[in-house]
Length: 346
Image (cartoon, rainbow, N blue to C red):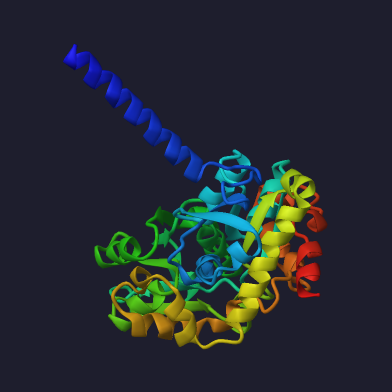
């Protein structure tokens, strides 16, 4: 009898635990929370990466709450994972690179950016210090092991674009998914990758410790245009088109919070921004985190709008690197919208 009771009690506890996990992580499609606020779940392709900083900053500043939203931010390895979870209906929105919306349209799926967080990638191709003598240009990456956060991620897309400009096809290198932060650094130290595309503060950690050197810098709009031949709007918040069309009031509240956050960023210093972030994001070095933020401060959109000419420039890169996209007629007007940012800024 005691054994049976223990079994029933264990089953009940397991069921309650699963219910709590699902309620925290699953997409609620704009359902009302207990506090009367609309609940939204947003999967972010790496919360501690500075390119995704506006997501946590909006929450820490209380702007989601002020907009009447109960937002759960879910950390994931890359924007690719976020895209998949949004499509599956497991989360309401994702934060990842804008180019995903173009890729999905080519695959017959509707996803659109509702607010642009970064107007440049905020990434860099970093070469291992051990290989610096052999790798001095992108052309020297041929045949090398190149680190990316995840296969199919924005970091891989950017690397493929740089390789294409140097006349190297993606099958002439070896892509290795190594994540970011500590896992990326370990992969370079262990010699598993010769170079790789990564973000801040990982870039500054690598260069400061003498582990790697920057080969191509995409941390400013100017250096990005020089490397890719034009602007390259990167991290955004995307949602399924059908969700956007059927939840306009909720989407507007969300975009209002993000636009308010972008304006806050551009009226505060790197030190003030850093003070708002969780301490564990500093990776044990707050001063380096601040320096890294200063290195790419210009990537953050001042108003959340898609920059003029940005979609066309990204599509141009996609056409050069992705046969699946080039073979389709892409309607860029369906990959993003400024409808909500226009209202938020007015």
